[in-house]
Image (cartoon, rainbow, N blue to C red; front, side, top):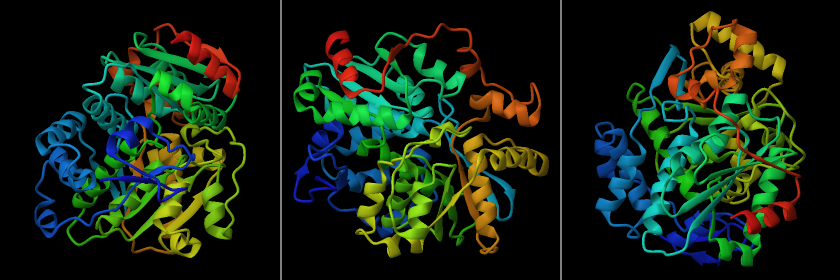
Amino acid sequence: MDFYSTKTPTYKVDLKEAVIRSLPPDNGLYMPETIPTLSDEFWANWRDYSFAELGFQIVKPLLGDDIPEDDLRAIVEDAINFDAPVVTLSDKLHILELFQGPTLAFKDFGARFMARLMGYLTRDDESMLTVLVATSGDTGGAVASAFHKVPGTRVVILYPKGKVSALQEKQLTTLGDNIHALEIDGTFDDCQRMVKAAFLNRELSEKLNLTSANSINISRLIPQSFYYFHAARQLPEGVEPTFVVPSGNFGNLTAGLLAQEMGLKIKHFVAATNANDVVPSYLKSGEYITRPSTATISNAMDVGAPSNFARMNEIYSGSWEGMRARIEGYAFDDDTTRVAIKRTADNYNYQVCPHTAVGVLAAEAWSETHSDDVNVVLATAHPSKFLPTMEEELGTDSVEIPERLACLADLPKEATLLPPDEQALQDWVATAL
């Protein structure tokens, strides 16, 4: 399978170039040359596959003959070794728990697959691979965990100072070894801009063998499509779900669109955002206007220039009408999100993190005019990752902290503070690595 740039469709590269280089030189995003429709044989058996086998059967036609089947199956089985259960709150409202992985966030699916795929693709290379990634919360922890102590790799994580939760910060600043954390005195958009600029510096990119672990990397996006299929098969046969997706950089929703293009029957998508409502505003007006991000309690969604919009636009061939016919968008402020956290706990005896609470709000709003739809809200992270907010709404000691997160609380933070300047990052990378 070849991959083309969303900005220059005639520019095509193979799988290794798309995954390892991450960004085309024109600053577009890579997309598969074709999105295959899954076979009749797949649909005859998809409900009976293990989760890992389901993922393998989905990714196999996407990657074509680039990786031998046995090797590709091994990559998927090693990456997807935890579940994503659907929890029923009511007959019309379900939660897809995507936080069962090692860092308690949905980013584990993409990060673990990507780390193993990169390791396979560079197994014969002599040069060190430098993974450069920006995070608004959970991506950094998932990438750090996936690549920690992986031979031949080093990871540089940029995160916005004061804009990730305390435990999220510990997940990416306490591992050491081959993991380097850069605390940027700015916003996530600054972090993302700095990372993109480093990749577009071809001399630096080639010298350090740079690759990205953000959802700009197509290998992060592909495995996120697996759990849409897995969620749909946990519902009664014949039900076409409406997926409600808490959204920041829109990689998660784009993965759902990919699943739909491959043949999964999905009734509708609902994009749920906080105050950073660039895409919902576009869906209403047809004007795509980026702006500086606003800090909220659902910090992983604080994105004012969602990079995956380019892929969404590509899937719909640039048609605003086409996109808005299949995606509805809603935005909610922090006060409303806090109410949803408390109400969900009271009504369903179920705790949702601030991001998932935004999804619950969007599902409720959608149901007001689509009462027959069966809504599946993607739960993006475990509530304990946002302890201050959760305890403010539900009370002290109300949220259980899993041991794999609790053990980080007292570890010392190791991070380098940098200004939100592209040259500052490039200078640091050139001298510190």
